[in-house]
Length: 479
Image 1: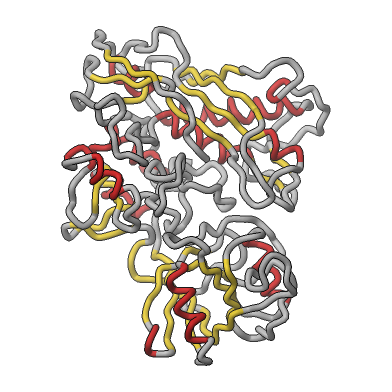
Image 2: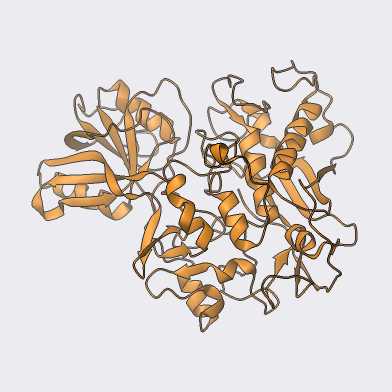
């Protein structure tokens, strides 16, 4: 999920008018006849989507998601979103599901909470009480039609166009609804306009995002960092890129739980707690954890004999199978370990920084699995090659997942892998949050219409929101 849209800069000062109630978000279909949102292919109606052409079902999901955001945000000014269903980047193992972002940014308008910083046009117009875009569209969003063509993500049968989680999704289909909610959130303000590659402010001006983005070690926010180089280093500083917004910080415990941790108990040379990312599929790790001997699993070959993409040849019965990330979906690896009798699985990263984002869906996977860093995986493999027995527990940490301490306070972490991942770095939560959050860089199939910590972050950057009754405040992110 990437922000790939061009940004046009402008500075306005406008008269104030009071905020209205719920915002109106209008979807503008930019596809041509017979394509994308106008595709006439006949399809069966769904319980929550009554339309019977492919294009109409797609458009219904877009407008339903837009309406849901509209009921949460306050604005007297219409928010206009131009959308298209087009072929985006994809392969057998990766795909850009969607991309979105603001079309213009604005600073120093009437009632701007912070001077000399960029705000996206939807938020800026809401705060100013006047349309700063002059009737032009505010957000551009694209979604990947190739998902429906069977050319992306091996084993994926296409999009699923339900608008309610109660609709049972067929195996191998990706729900469009959470992807749309995610992308619209980027356009509504879940993004910085500062270049993560260079650290340079857009047009020499920081964004409101940069007033809350900070380094956990020094506590310095991006807006106060001395140089572009300092911001560039911060963008790849995982786990030390944090969000210092007071509302997110106050409410994080309402949305995050204790985090996953891999506890290596033997040998002593590598013993200790290791950061881990839980899989979005399979069984949850029980409170007591899952303990056992770790074996580096080999398979029948293919691209690599260590990736678990083919049937395992190592006897992992009753053991924890260790496999390398890459070459096939996480679900395939863990299912192969399960078929070989493993009690759990560990996937070590194939990149030097960060943890694997253990996404995917397969109802037939019943064992638990964690993703770990390349360094921790290499350390275990080195011991196993001695040979030395490695014992570990897939467990639960006492600390809230996806957080980091700074100045005595715990803050939610942002995505800061090394190297920078354009469209993913900085403008997402870390992949280590648990339970999963909507604004992580990859789709989590455990989510459908939850907006969780996105609302507190929107409040941090200036959005005024529709507050539900207190009994609903923290249930599924205003659901």
